[in-house]
Amino acid sequence: MKIGLVDSGIGLLAAAAAIRRLRPDADLVLSSDPEGMPWGPRTPQDVAGRALECARAAAARGLDALVVACNTASVHALPALRAEFEPLLPVVGTVPAIKPAASAHAAVAIWATPATTGSPYQRGLIDEFGNGARVTEVPCPGLADAVEAGDAAAVAAAVAAAAARTPAGTEAVVLGCTHYELVADRIAEAVPGALLYGSADAVAAQVLRRVALSAQSGQVHKDAAGEGPRGGALEVLLDGRAAELSPVARVYPQGALLAEAPARA
Picture 1 (cartoon, rainbow, N blue to C red):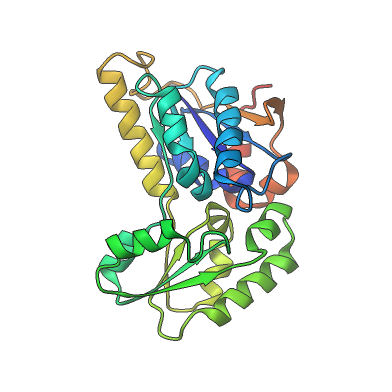
Picture 2: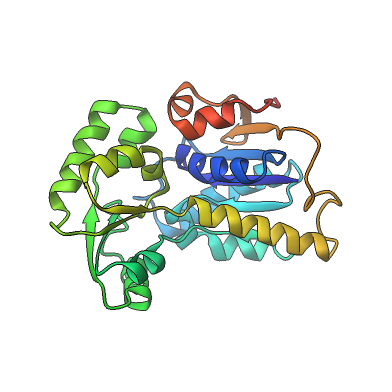
């Protein structure tokens, strides 16, 4: 089984690590766009074009499924990606975990990038899945950039600022950017008592379901749905070029887990 993941930067590590924990034998292809990041401030057309380029580079490695491991790209690029690759290649997007959080809690905060906060997309999710909960949108300027840079001081400052904007009594925090899951421990410390809701585990479960369904229909490799005999390999593509997992990525637990896999140049 080989699964590709697409993001502007290292936000894809969370979903990749979740897949690795569920299927240690799966080969993973991490395809990102360091020359074009961040995607948040870009036009929808630009985001879609860049996500397509990353996806094509990964798909050329012979995938069984593709994960759009980025909230921004899932909003702006998912239709274009599905139009190009499905039904032969299943494409799974990333959606903030508003529904499970609001189903279980009366007071919910959504931490997201400034571009996503207040957007019609996020407001639509709140309207559809808010379940009557008090939902507060919390912009987190600089947090994704700090995570990407591995700047611990900047992460701490951005987390503290977002925590100060989070209402007292918040019971759950939805992590509305995949980068935030890499520093979930620091966010949990800043909002004590609140449960965190990320999307990585749900994305991992969904992509494995899609691969299994495709295997049943004969669209993927014969052994894609079965347990393989070896540890999965890891390929890293930066702007379509083969690379190694960056030192910054290895700082985070998810990156350290992936670094244990045998790399393929």
